[in-house]
Image 1: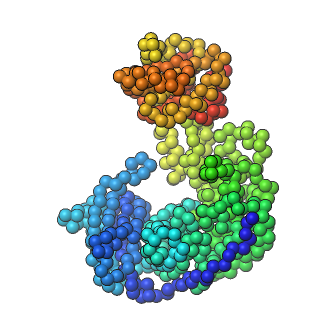
Image 2: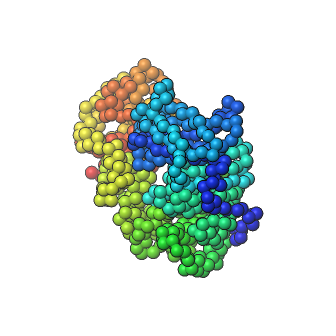
Image 3: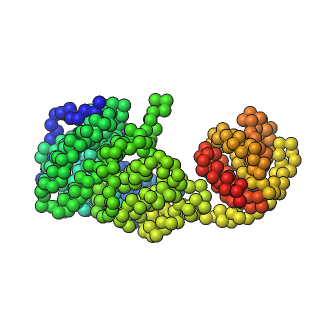
Length: 592
């Protein structure tokens, strides 16, 4: 049964320190900037009795090269800065150079640090300049304690800012073993920020030069604001009001779904709705920028929390484990109230870190509210069209399209054109432009082969007989490219057998397996064919010399399809585990 009112916890003070001197008495601020556009990680390391421990990290990007560290001024403790220069290779940045900068700091003194990446040299001690900071820097300082930490080694806390409706980590710190922490940052534009760990997330409102102190309960994720800026006082009141509906997968990511009664949750929500509407009407603050952002936050919180919970509850345990859910199951009529014409018509919601998640789940909910019969008839491209139509504003559409391109799996250029080309106009701006071009680039080379003859290779079968695709003229040929050393390939065998059984009586379809094993392990190849009871015609391609390299196959398993005239229909078909998707390819080829 869902508890309607959370247990009270001891009041936790939230203090705004209005003078720099208070924060600086036991803390150094080291503010800096990389003078060149760079991708880097700056790691602050604390050394005590020759034992080192990383206590903070800053991620540097070409568009944001500023950083600031809060460094405790403690006797017997020294610090150094590890400068890791990165290069973007594929989807993840890779380290290519590392430098270590000892930090010699005087008590009660702040510093500026300028780093020139191209001149960094440990031996010559060049590439950086550390100076005492005489001017007062507009540093925002957040300190506090995390209580109820289960481990004594400390906890990593990230400070996230909001970029285009999503939360992006800008820096992180490690708490002490007692849970205390200090985070310094440059707030160039006031707005919502988030403190987060793998367990909880706390929203705060920051302005340049703010001094905030707060305590957070690690077990519950609760933050209690007692003294603070007017904006944070109002934010705290709102968070307290809606706590009965946000403690489940919203601000707190770890919770027990088995104890939640959805009907009781809905009743709690309905009782709370008048108070939430009244709170929205009575917002009284002289800061128009805050009011605009906060009203968007209220709209998102009051709708995303129940929708997010429904998605969690749609996931069913499998062998005691609850996998991440991507689709809604049955949707109670209560949720229809959140579907509104012209939704997402204003890009101002991008000031809120949960905006992109809200758009995604809202679009999914639109489809989930269709009848089961209607949903089952929809193709992936039709689903995307319905979801895109649920977003009104073009800027929001572009971001939503970018996110969907990153999440929806496509197998080949044909599917790319069917799924994404209808929305190409929304890929004219970043980041959708880069995502669109990147995915297109993965498949654009396939045009070299699609529609061309497959009669340009021949391979031996298990008896040594040479087989060519000409032998199967007037038949559709489905090709499975695999190898004995490929685990994912073997994982597809059971699904492939199911497909072969369904088409066993169709004499117009031939199944061909092509192994990329070397010829000197032929016996191993033949043993696996017998062990796995593989059907169809099995051919051996000596480490890709006759087939794999010709068709630029760099990863397996790969599934390919040839038409009755011996021309390639697709060189990247869905895997057999996606049974219904693959059958559509086979049935279409057989009908033509």
